[in-house]
Length: 104
Image 1 (tube, rainbow, N blue to C red):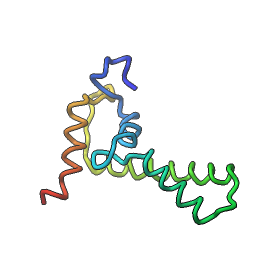
Image 2 (tube, one colour):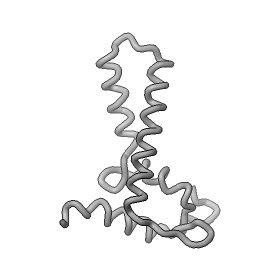
Image 3 (spheres, rainbow, N blue to C red):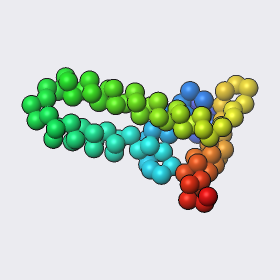
């Protein structure tokens, strides 16, 4: 993701992708959620076609990405003029958001 910047900062466009890949409670842990979603769909629809399953998974991804972006907006993350944010700052916001409910 940030090979160009030596892993020091990330562009604002990629924050939602990072948030989707992080395990819970810091992120949404999309891979785990996707697997659970696929298993639920296969249990409910035993005769589902692979194309239909992929369509449902794609729609699920869009909803998860929207949820990630909504949560990131709630964090009030600010970036510099070039659209970058340093990893230490982004993880501060992620930890603050994850622990917010347990502290208050």
